[in-house]
Figure 1 (tube, rainbow, N blue to C red):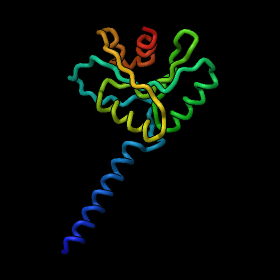
Figure 2: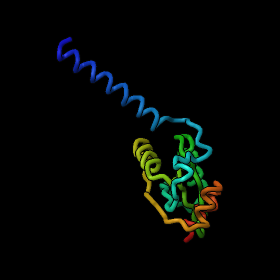
Figure 3: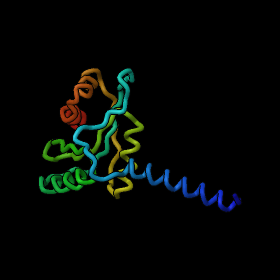
Figure 4: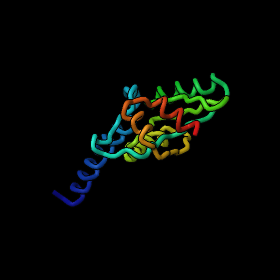
Length: 142
């Protein structure tokens, strides 16, 4: 096998691996009705990470964004704050998962603001009990 054929073969293999990884990270239409929790049971949770996709006064505006984000495969939460509504996507207690979501948002051309908060024991319990919306309301309104 010549050096050129070997190089071409390696290029094809690397391209195939990249395509599979790209599909896994950015696949559209996946079921995200529940946030994926990557942390192990023994991992201590002390920080929650999320992406803020917008803050809106008009219901029609945030509902339109919510639909767009849901159709793209994100888990979306619309959290009231005073007279506004904050649109949050894919909160996570796992930094690696959060980084994947940031990459997916960037790849989809979605402008987001990166947010994080330290959690107290009560908030960790809300997360563990999958009371995500209640937890986000508390964090957004702090």
